[in-house]
Length: 367
Image 1 (cartoon, helix red, strand yellow):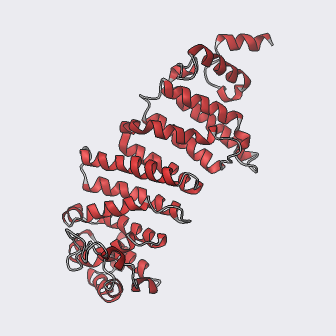
Image 2 (cartoon, helix red, strand yellow; image 1 turned 45 degrees about the horizontal axis):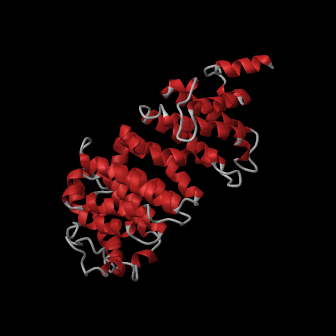
Image 3 (cartoon, helix red, strand yellow; image 1 turned 180 degrees about the vertical axis):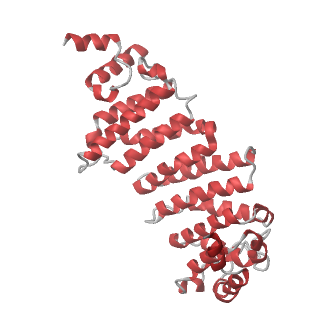
Protein backbone atom coordinates (compact mmCIF):
# COMPACT_ATOMS: atom_id res chain seq x y z
CA UNK A 1 0.00 0.00 0.00
CA UNK A 2 2.84 2.38 0.82
CA UNK A 3 4.43 1.72 -2.56
CA UNK A 4 1.13 2.42 -4.33
CA UNK A 5 0.63 5.70 -2.48
CA UNK A 6 4.23 6.69 -3.22
CA UNK A 7 3.65 6.06 -6.91
CA UNK A 8 0.58 8.34 -6.85
CA UNK A 9 2.35 11.17 -5.05
CA UNK A 10 3.27 14.15 -7.27
CA UNK A 11 6.88 14.58 -8.25
CA UNK A 12 8.87 17.60 -7.04
CA UNK A 13 8.74 18.98 -10.57
CA UNK A 14 4.93 18.88 -10.63
CA UNK A 15 4.82 20.70 -7.29
CA UNK A 16 7.26 23.28 -8.60
CA UNK A 17 5.11 23.91 -11.68
CA UNK A 18 2.01 24.38 -9.53
CA UNK A 19 3.83 26.80 -7.25
CA UNK A 20 5.46 28.79 -10.05
CA UNK A 21 2.50 28.94 -12.46
CA UNK A 22 -0.49 29.04 -10.11
CA UNK A 23 0.55 30.13 -6.62
CA UNK A 24 3.37 32.65 -6.99
CA UNK A 25 1.57 34.92 -9.50
CA UNK A 26 -1.31 35.34 -7.04
CA UNK A 27 0.84 36.23 -4.03
CA UNK A 28 3.73 38.18 -5.58
CA UNK A 29 1.75 41.44 -6.15
CA UNK A 30 1.35 41.78 -2.34
CA UNK A 31 4.56 40.27 -0.90
CA UNK A 32 5.17 39.69 2.78
CA UNK A 33 7.46 42.54 3.92
CA UNK A 34 9.63 40.34 6.17
CA UNK A 35 10.59 37.85 3.47
CA UNK A 36 12.96 37.64 0.55
CA UNK A 37 10.94 36.29 -2.37
CA UNK A 38 14.12 35.00 -4.00
CA UNK A 39 15.36 32.88 -1.08
CA UNK A 40 12.45 32.48 1.37
CA UNK A 41 14.67 33.84 4.13
CA UNK A 42 13.70 36.39 6.73
CA UNK A 43 14.91 39.92 6.00
CA UNK A 44 16.84 41.83 8.63
CA UNK A 45 14.38 44.71 8.34
CA UNK A 46 11.00 44.91 6.61
CA UNK A 47 11.13 45.75 2.92
CA UNK A 48 9.44 49.04 2.22
CA UNK A 49 9.68 50.36 5.76
CA UNK A 50 7.17 50.20 8.63
CA UNK A 51 4.18 50.99 6.40
CA UNK A 52 4.84 47.94 4.24
CA UNK A 53 2.99 45.73 6.70
CA UNK A 54 -0.29 47.26 5.53
CA UNK A 55 0.61 47.12 1.84
CA UNK A 56 0.29 43.32 1.84
CA UNK A 57 -3.43 43.73 2.51
CA UNK A 58 -4.04 45.83 -0.63
CA UNK A 59 -5.59 44.00 -3.54
CA UNK A 60 -4.80 40.49 -2.37
CA UNK A 61 -5.23 38.81 -5.70
CA UNK A 62 -4.77 35.40 -4.06
CA UNK A 63 -8.12 35.73 -2.30
CA UNK A 64 -9.99 36.07 -5.57
CA UNK A 65 -9.25 32.43 -6.37
CA UNK A 66 -11.10 30.35 -3.78
CA UNK A 67 -8.91 27.30 -4.21
CA UNK A 68 -5.59 29.07 -3.63
CA UNK A 69 -5.18 28.25 0.12
CA UNK A 70 -6.02 24.60 -0.53
CA UNK A 71 -3.53 24.51 -3.40
CA UNK A 72 -0.75 25.79 -1.14
CA UNK A 73 -1.70 23.19 1.47
CA UNK A 74 -1.59 20.43 -1.15
CA UNK A 75 1.89 21.50 -2.21
CA UNK A 76 3.20 21.72 1.36
CA UNK A 77 1.80 18.32 2.25
CA UNK A 78 3.43 16.60 -0.71
CA UNK A 79 6.93 18.02 -0.47
CA UNK A 80 9.41 15.51 0.90
CA UNK A 81 12.11 16.45 3.38
CA UNK A 82 14.90 16.49 0.79
CA UNK A 83 12.97 18.78 -1.57
CA UNK A 84 12.15 21.58 0.86
CA UNK A 85 15.51 23.21 0.21
CA UNK A 86 14.81 23.79 -3.49
CA UNK A 87 11.15 24.76 -3.05
CA UNK A 88 11.58 26.86 0.10
CA UNK A 89 11.40 30.25 -1.66
CA UNK A 90 8.14 29.20 -3.33
CA UNK A 91 6.42 27.79 -0.24
CA UNK A 92 7.31 30.23 2.54
CA UNK A 93 5.91 33.50 1.07
CA UNK A 94 2.32 32.24 0.62
CA UNK A 95 2.37 30.43 3.97
CA UNK A 96 3.53 33.52 5.86
CA UNK A 97 1.12 35.75 3.97
CA UNK A 98 -1.83 33.61 5.07
CA UNK A 99 -0.51 33.36 8.63
CA UNK A 100 -0.34 37.14 8.98
CA UNK A 101 -3.58 37.93 7.18
CA UNK A 102 -6.26 39.86 9.04
CA UNK A 103 -9.06 37.35 8.34
CA UNK A 104 -9.32 34.42 10.71
CA UNK A 105 -10.18 31.81 8.09
CA UNK A 106 -6.96 32.54 6.19
CA UNK A 107 -4.96 32.51 9.40
CA UNK A 108 -6.27 28.99 9.98
CA UNK A 109 -5.12 27.99 6.51
CA UNK A 110 -1.72 29.48 7.31
CA UNK A 111 -1.43 27.55 10.58
CA UNK A 112 -2.41 24.31 8.84
CA UNK A 113 0.41 24.84 6.36
CA UNK A 114 2.84 25.83 9.12
CA UNK A 115 2.03 22.67 11.08
CA UNK A 116 2.89 20.48 8.08
CA UNK A 117 6.02 22.51 7.40
CA UNK A 118 7.23 22.08 10.99
CA UNK A 119 6.57 18.33 10.90
CA UNK A 120 8.14 17.62 7.51
CA UNK A 121 10.83 20.20 6.79
CA UNK A 122 14.36 19.67 8.12
CA UNK A 123 14.73 21.69 11.35
CA UNK A 124 18.07 23.03 10.17
CA UNK A 125 16.38 24.87 7.28
CA UNK A 126 13.69 26.34 9.53
CA UNK A 127 16.35 27.73 11.87
CA UNK A 128 18.95 28.75 9.29
CA UNK A 129 16.53 30.83 7.20
CA UNK A 130 15.12 32.69 10.19
CA UNK A 131 11.65 31.30 9.52
CA UNK A 132 11.51 29.62 12.93
CA UNK A 133 11.60 32.98 14.71
CA UNK A 134 9.13 34.46 12.22
CA UNK A 135 6.73 31.57 12.71
CA UNK A 136 6.98 32.05 16.46
CA UNK A 137 6.03 35.71 16.18
CA UNK A 138 3.10 34.93 13.89
CA UNK A 139 1.78 32.13 16.10
CA UNK A 140 1.94 34.41 19.14
CA UNK A 141 -0.29 36.88 17.31
CA UNK A 142 -2.98 34.23 16.95
CA UNK A 143 -3.76 34.62 20.64
CA UNK A 144 -4.49 38.31 20.08
CA UNK A 145 -7.04 37.62 17.36
CA UNK A 146 -10.07 37.53 19.67
CA UNK A 147 -13.82 38.17 19.55
CA UNK A 148 -14.28 36.37 16.26
CA UNK A 149 -16.58 33.37 15.70
CA UNK A 150 -13.59 31.39 14.44
CA UNK A 151 -11.25 32.34 17.30
CA UNK A 152 -11.78 29.02 19.17
CA UNK A 153 -10.86 27.04 16.05
CA UNK A 154 -7.82 29.25 15.50
CA UNK A 155 -6.60 28.68 19.06
CA UNK A 156 -7.19 24.93 18.87
CA UNK A 157 -4.93 24.59 15.85
CA UNK A 158 -2.37 27.26 16.80
CA UNK A 159 -1.49 25.91 20.26
CA UNK A 160 -0.26 22.43 19.20
CA UNK A 161 1.53 24.00 16.24
CA UNK A 162 3.29 26.44 18.56
CA UNK A 163 4.38 23.56 20.81
CA UNK A 164 5.71 21.55 17.85
CA UNK A 165 7.64 24.58 16.62
CA UNK A 166 9.26 25.13 20.03
CA UNK A 167 10.20 21.47 20.29
CA UNK A 168 11.62 21.57 16.77
CA UNK A 169 13.90 24.59 17.00
CA UNK A 170 15.01 24.33 20.65
CA UNK A 171 16.75 21.57 22.59
CA UNK A 172 14.56 19.71 25.05
CA UNK A 173 16.38 20.93 28.16
CA UNK A 174 17.27 24.44 26.98
CA UNK A 175 16.29 27.62 28.77
CA UNK A 176 15.04 29.07 25.47
CA UNK A 177 12.50 26.26 25.08
CA UNK A 178 11.23 26.78 28.62
CA UNK A 179 10.97 30.54 28.08
CA UNK A 180 8.89 30.02 24.92
CA UNK A 181 6.54 27.67 26.76
CA UNK A 182 6.24 30.14 29.64
CA UNK A 183 5.35 32.77 27.05
CA UNK A 184 2.65 30.51 25.63
CA UNK A 185 0.99 29.86 28.98
CA UNK A 186 1.70 33.06 30.86
CA UNK A 187 1.40 35.75 28.20
CA UNK A 188 -0.61 34.23 25.40
CA UNK A 189 -3.23 32.15 27.25
CA UNK A 190 -3.47 33.73 30.70
CA UNK A 191 -2.40 37.29 29.95
CA UNK A 192 -4.09 37.76 26.58
CA UNK A 193 -6.96 35.33 26.03
CA UNK A 194 -8.16 35.16 29.65
CA UNK A 195 -7.45 38.83 30.16
CA UNK A 196 -9.30 40.18 27.12
CA UNK A 197 -11.83 37.49 26.20
CA UNK A 198 -13.05 36.33 29.61
CA UNK A 199 -16.70 36.67 28.52
CA UNK A 200 -16.26 34.59 25.33
CA UNK A 201 -17.12 31.17 26.69
CA UNK A 202 -16.26 29.22 23.55
CA UNK A 203 -12.84 30.85 23.44
CA UNK A 204 -12.20 30.17 27.12
CA UNK A 205 -13.38 26.60 26.68
CA UNK A 206 -10.88 26.13 23.84
CA UNK A 207 -8.00 27.24 26.04
CA UNK A 208 -9.16 25.00 28.90
CA UNK A 209 -9.14 22.01 26.55
CA UNK A 210 -5.63 22.90 25.37
CA UNK A 211 -4.03 23.39 28.78
CA UNK A 212 -3.16 19.71 29.42
CA UNK A 213 -0.88 19.65 26.36
CA UNK A 214 0.96 22.68 27.76
CA UNK A 215 1.18 21.08 31.21
CA UNK A 216 2.74 18.00 29.61
CA UNK A 217 5.50 20.15 28.11
CA UNK A 218 6.17 22.28 31.19
CA UNK A 219 5.89 19.52 33.77
CA UNK A 220 6.53 20.70 37.32
CA UNK A 221 7.33 24.18 35.99
CA UNK A 222 3.57 24.61 35.58
CA UNK A 223 3.53 25.37 39.33
CA UNK A 224 4.67 28.90 38.49
CA UNK A 225 1.14 29.65 37.30
CA UNK A 226 -0.97 27.89 39.94
CA UNK A 227 -2.28 31.17 41.31
CA UNK A 228 -3.81 31.91 37.90
CA UNK A 229 -4.77 28.39 36.82
CA UNK A 230 -6.61 27.17 39.91
CA UNK A 231 -9.01 30.16 40.14
CA UNK A 232 -9.89 29.83 36.45
CA UNK A 233 -10.48 26.08 36.64
CA UNK A 234 -12.65 26.25 39.77
CA UNK A 235 -14.66 29.21 38.46
CA UNK A 236 -17.52 27.08 37.04
CA UNK A 237 -18.03 25.58 40.50
CA UNK A 238 -17.86 28.85 42.42
CA UNK A 239 -19.52 31.26 39.97
CA UNK A 240 -22.64 33.15 41.03
CA UNK A 241 -25.78 31.18 40.09
CA UNK A 242 -26.85 34.13 37.92
CA UNK A 243 -23.82 33.44 35.72
CA UNK A 244 -24.88 30.36 33.80
CA UNK A 245 -21.98 28.09 32.94
CA UNK A 246 -22.33 25.55 30.16
CA UNK A 247 -21.95 21.87 30.96
CA UNK A 248 -19.19 21.70 28.35
CA UNK A 249 -17.06 24.30 30.12
CA UNK A 250 -17.87 22.77 33.51
CA UNK A 251 -16.68 19.31 32.46
CA UNK A 252 -13.64 20.64 30.61
CA UNK A 253 -12.57 22.61 33.67
CA UNK A 254 -12.84 19.55 35.92
CA UNK A 255 -10.85 17.40 33.50
CA UNK A 256 -8.09 20.00 33.22
CA UNK A 257 -8.09 20.54 36.99
CA UNK A 258 -7.37 16.84 37.47
CA UNK A 259 -4.48 17.09 35.01
CA UNK A 260 -3.15 20.16 36.82
CA UNK A 261 -3.23 18.41 40.21
CA UNK A 262 -1.34 15.41 38.84
CA UNK A 263 1.24 17.65 37.17
CA UNK A 264 1.77 19.85 40.23
CA UNK A 265 1.12 17.26 42.92
CA UNK A 266 4.08 18.42 45.02
CA UNK A 267 2.44 21.84 45.45
CA UNK A 268 -1.21 20.86 45.91
CA UNK A 269 -1.13 19.68 49.55
CA UNK A 270 -1.70 22.59 51.90
CA UNK A 271 -3.55 25.76 50.97
CA UNK A 272 -4.37 24.68 47.40
CA UNK A 273 -6.07 21.51 48.61
CA UNK A 274 -8.30 23.66 50.82
CA UNK A 275 -9.26 25.91 47.92
CA UNK A 276 -9.98 22.98 45.61
CA UNK A 277 -11.98 20.82 48.02
CA UNK A 278 -14.08 23.81 49.06
CA UNK A 279 -14.81 24.58 45.42
CA UNK A 280 -15.71 20.96 44.61
CA UNK A 281 -18.11 20.91 47.54
CA UNK A 282 -19.77 24.12 46.38
CA UNK A 283 -19.94 22.80 42.85
CA UNK A 284 -21.64 19.63 44.07
CA UNK A 285 -24.26 21.60 45.96
CA UNK A 286 -24.87 24.09 43.13
CA UNK A 287 -24.54 21.63 40.23
CA UNK A 288 -28.24 22.04 39.35
CA UNK A 289 -27.44 25.62 38.30
CA UNK A 290 -25.07 24.65 35.47
CA UNK A 291 -27.70 25.16 32.75
CA UNK A 292 -31.41 25.69 32.78
CA UNK A 293 -31.81 22.67 30.52
CA UNK A 294 -29.12 20.49 32.10
CA UNK A 295 -30.89 17.50 33.60
CA UNK A 296 -30.73 13.75 33.70
CA UNK A 297 -27.66 12.14 32.18
CA UNK A 298 -25.67 15.39 31.98
CA UNK A 299 -26.28 16.16 35.65
CA UNK A 300 -25.22 12.65 36.57
CA UNK A 301 -22.03 13.02 34.49
CA UNK A 302 -21.17 16.33 36.16
CA UNK A 303 -21.50 14.82 39.62
CA UNK A 304 -19.41 11.81 38.60
CA UNK A 305 -16.71 14.15 37.35
CA UNK A 306 -16.82 16.14 40.60
CA UNK A 307 -16.30 12.94 42.57
CA UNK A 308 -13.53 11.83 40.22
CA UNK A 309 -11.77 15.16 40.70
CA UNK A 310 -12.12 14.82 44.47
CA UNK A 311 -10.51 11.39 44.18
CA UNK A 312 -7.50 12.85 42.38
CA UNK A 313 -7.20 15.53 45.05
CA UNK A 314 -7.18 12.90 47.81
CA UNK A 315 -4.60 10.90 45.84
CA UNK A 316 -2.15 13.82 45.63
CA UNK A 317 -3.04 15.21 49.07
CA UNK A 318 -4.03 12.28 51.33
CA UNK A 319 -4.21 14.43 54.45
CA UNK A 320 -7.14 16.35 52.93
CA UNK A 321 -9.33 13.28 53.45
CA UNK A 322 -9.38 13.89 57.21
CA UNK A 323 -8.55 17.52 57.85
CA UNK A 324 -7.70 20.73 56.03
CA UNK A 325 -5.06 23.33 56.81
CA UNK A 326 -6.21 26.83 57.80
CA UNK A 327 -6.61 29.55 55.21
CA UNK A 328 -6.05 33.28 55.43
CA UNK A 329 -9.78 33.66 56.12
CA UNK A 330 -10.58 30.73 58.40
CA UNK A 331 -8.79 29.07 61.30
CA UNK A 332 -8.22 25.33 61.25
CA UNK A 333 -11.02 24.66 63.77
CA UNK A 334 -13.65 26.74 61.96
CA UNK A 335 -12.72 25.28 58.57
CA UNK A 336 -12.85 21.73 59.92
CA UNK A 337 -16.38 22.25 61.29
CA UNK A 338 -17.56 23.53 57.89
CA UNK A 339 -15.81 20.68 56.15
CA UNK A 340 -17.45 18.05 58.39
CA UNK A 341 -20.84 19.67 57.86
CA UNK A 342 -20.47 19.43 54.08
CA UNK A 343 -19.35 15.80 54.31
CA UNK A 344 -22.39 15.03 56.42
CA UNK A 345 -24.87 16.99 54.29
CA UNK A 346 -23.61 15.61 50.96
CA UNK A 347 -22.37 12.05 51.69
CA UNK A 348 -22.59 10.99 48.02
CA UNK A 349 -19.77 13.37 47.12
CA UNK A 350 -17.43 11.61 49.56
CA UNK A 351 -18.67 8.08 48.94
CA UNK A 352 -15.83 5.52 48.61
CA UNK A 353 -13.37 7.93 50.22
CA UNK A 354 -12.21 8.17 53.81
CA UNK A 355 -14.96 8.26 56.47
CA UNK A 356 -16.03 11.50 58.12
CA UNK A 357 -14.22 12.85 61.13
CA UNK A 358 -15.32 11.49 64.51
CA UNK A 359 -17.45 14.55 65.35
CA UNK A 360 -19.49 14.37 62.15
CA UNK A 361 -19.81 10.57 62.44
CA UNK A 362 -21.17 10.78 65.99
CA UNK A 363 -23.69 13.41 64.90
CA UNK A 364 -24.93 11.18 62.08
CA UNK A 365 -25.21 8.15 64.41
CA UNK A 366 -27.11 10.25 66.97
CA UNK A 367 -29.77 11.04 64.42
